[in-house]
Structures are given as structure tokens and as C-alpha cells.
Amino acid sequence: MSSLLSFGLPKGSLEEATLKLFSRAGFNITKGSRSYTPSWDDPDLEGRFVRAQEMSRYVEDGFFDCGLTGRDWVQENGSEVEVVADLVYSRASNRISKWVLAVPENSAIQTVKDLEGKTIATELVGVTKKFLRDHDVKAEVEFSWGATEVKVPELVDAIVDLTETGSSIRANKLRIVEVLLETNTVLIANKESWANQEKRAKIENIALMLDAALQADTKVGLKLNLEKSKLSEVLETLPSLRNPTISSLAIDNWIAVETVIEKKVSREIIPALKRLGAEGIVEYPLNKIVP
Image 1 (spheres, one colour):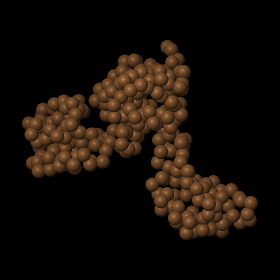
Image 2 (image 1 turned 90 degrees about the vertical axis):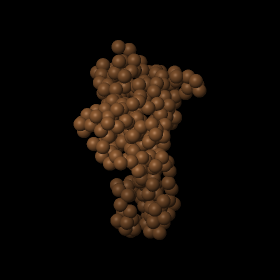
Image 3 (image 1 turned 45 degrees about the vertical axis):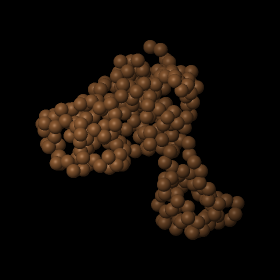
Image 4 (image 1 turned 180 degrees about the vertical axis):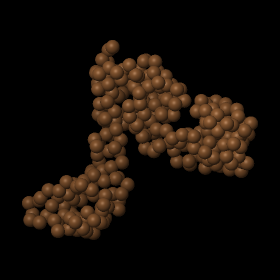
């Protein structure tokens, strides 16, 4: 088996976010506007872009050694692949997404049982059919090519659609009846490639760096100077500053404190630190965090 690793990159909604993630992880991938074959700055990597919906089949069949897709599409395709890592990111956010059963706000459908004899539109046909079988409900499930939310109530009675925040569901005056499954981006590997020691090591290295970039995406570094006598008060008041690095300054009784905090809380923490007497406060972005 060749040591060159063939990597499947998701074409479509995940494409731009994936290229940015690889860049933060230290991999430079370039492609032309109409090209499906990118150029890598790593001589041990090659690959191309394909739709996330198809990725798990290509990885299972060995066309790719590994690739990025949604956990939902692995399940939909019934693919026998190795799930190497969960990488929670998408086109719009770093959130877990959900496939939900939704109906018009004024629909009489209140539970899954009320779908008996109804018609449902979705892109996730296989998972939806299994969901209905598990609930002993017989309903027609038709494949939707997109814009699924606009098909109710004129064309279908209900939809199963993907949502991150639920905003699109609410905007289209729909109501969620049930969550079928939660999903996120995953790095998957071909079983035979995963059994190859050299390829597995390369895949694990990539997984580590991608995860490190994602870990850093929601955090920032923080430096500050503080009178030593105030350290206990700062740590009691600001529990986010767990396990900071503390070093002495040239000025007697002053220390330097450095830590990592959640990006979203820095706007409360920095003013609080200032009020507690901290000086020289510096917030800086992080590129990677390896737990």
C-alpha cells in the first residue's frame, strides 16, 4: 500500500470552513475556482473535493484513505468506516447540528404517531425511514433536492431538515416535533488504511492538529501584571482563571499572570481584572491548543 495519503475534502457548504480550518492547523491547501483537485503543501498528501453526502462511500471503498463528512451521512450511507475524530464545525458556527422533524405551526401533527399516512420530504431518506419504522409509523418519505422548508404544507405534510440554531425553521413558520439525530463533522478513515501503521500515524497527526485549531477557535490568551497580595482575590473572583502560569517580576511583590480563557467571557473578565488592580492586561489570539 502506498504511503501517500489520499484525503477527501468536502465540496459545498463545508468547503470554505474546511480550508480555513486546515490553514489554522498548519496546512496550506490551494485550488482554482473550478478545480476539484487541490494542491497541498505536504508532499505526503493528495486528494480532491467531493460532496459530503458521498464521502463515506468513497472512503469505505478505498478511493480515499480518509475524509471529512458529517456523522449523519456516515449513518445515512451505512458506511463501514473508522470514525477517527469529532470536529465540531460547520459553515456558520462551531455547533452541533440537528436533523429535526418539522411541521407548519398550525399543523394538527403533534407527535410522530400523527404522521401515519402522511408525506415527508427530506434529503436524509434512509435515516428518516428507519426513524418511522422504529416508531411503527407508515408514511411516505420522498427525497428533497433542497429548499425543503418551503414544501410544507402545499407539497408535503412534514419535513426532516438540518438546523443549527432553529432560526430557519422559525423563519418559515414551522414547528419542531422531534429531533431525529444530532450530527457534526467527523474525520473518517478507510478500515484498511487505518490498519496501515504509517497511514494511521499520518491520519492521527492531522486529526490532532485540526482538533487543536478548533480548540483554539473559542479561546484567547490573557497576560496581566498584578500585586502578589491580590492573587487570591483575583482567583476567587474569576474562576475562569484556572491554573494560570505565575512568574515573578523585577518589581518586588508583583507577579505576571498568564492563562487561557473562553473568548466569550473576556469582555467581563478584563474589566473585572482592571477593577481588582491588574495592569498591563494583554489579550491575544491563539492558533492551536493541544489538551
